[in-house]
Length: 243
Ligand code: FPP
Image (cartoon, rainbow, N blue to C red; front, side, top):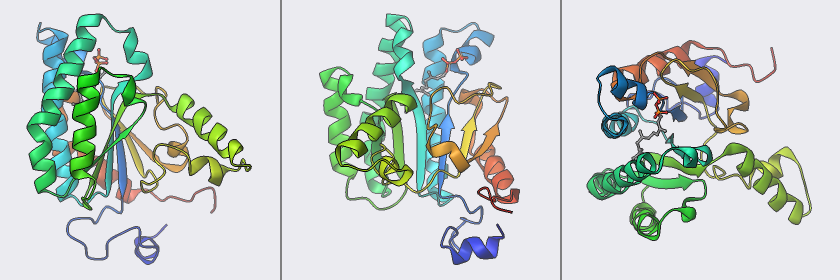
């Protein structure tokens, strides 16, 4: 698709504040925290902590780059299989992140959204999350969607069951029940650390997304890498199955 057509469709802000890449919604599988720490003979938790620093920078960049939505894979349904102390470290970091960064989101019109079943987390985490959701619900800038206790196959099964209960099973009726229903279509899916798979993340939403893989480990991922991915996205011709 030419950029002119994209502008005509309203997918690109014409002449718009840095949003010349055409992407509205980017998702990231943030992988490699453990390997980053191991290379430095540090505990894995330190890798996750540096991963949160990378999250903060990338959320700021997503805002200034004009993205409507950024979806981050923070905790999968499979992550419960990790050792208890690592899960505790991830929960502690999540809580700390919400407490320390909520004012910045609120001040910068960032709307927080959760995909996945976050209510399975400990009550104090659920309370913090719900407070952050409520506080940012009226914001209209970039949506930061954090995937917590998220698995795409379960999401699709649940959406299909809801669609069936309403009487129609079509791609559109299922899509309307997905956790991402109110977000723009996914344009670009990034995975760090050299792994080349989707790991049960946004399987439905990725149907026509562009995929971008990098060897960079997540704690080393900088706004420049996001820009590189968006530049690559802007060069790609998306045909959505047509010619
Ligand atoms: C993958 O690294 C990363 C995760 C399992 C979690 C990602 C979480 C964060 C960046 C921190 C929490 C997020 C927020 C939004 C506060 P890995 O441990 O699988 O790395 P490895 O494959 O090198 O072992």
